[in-house]
Image (tube, rainbow over all chains, first blue to last red; front, side, top):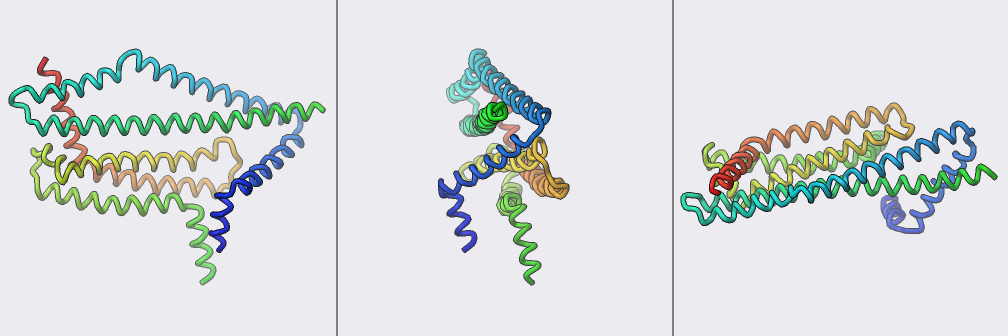
Length: 145
Length: 138
């Protein structure tokens, strides 16, 4: 019964929103109760982390663009094309080509999954940090009053 | 009796993900071990190509699952240690993180050992031969 209720709470949007609201209020009170020095430290830390993550994300995007421009993927496709062409050459086992093609596709699939996971992690972190940054900026305004 | 029940419940709550990871991968390791045994009994060390084609590319599928399992393990350990970077933590949490690391590290090592001989060796051999062949005929 307890687990059923927990599952329902986890699914329900209102419950999740309420939970997040409670956490936000606690955080707001914590930030408002801080001394100026403590708040300045938190503010700079979050700001710096946000800028750093933005920098990392842009470096990854630029690197991806460079690999596309430098034709690294093109070389991989060229290799697959060469494998396909090997079918016309005598004395080369057909099974060998078939297995190699499957392996190349499998390795590409693994690289793709790892890439998607890294980008997903970075974007999720960026979203959380942006939320944190907007929040601390609003608190900064509140502290002035 | 209730004390033990509570302790087990707490253990499951703390290490839920690691337990799931360990159980799934232990079952997978058993299947992998069985496959390795079948491969060794049916093929010699030179028949790498036939090995990979065994039962409609079963070893290749096992290789992909192993790599994904290793990535999953790394993500679990990373998420445990991530907490320490910016949040306050209890000293006991370091012990939990160490235990989590031990759980997953053992599984990852076993996976690498199991997949290395003969599936990974066969894959390395076939890829190497294919690259050599592809660039030999211009």
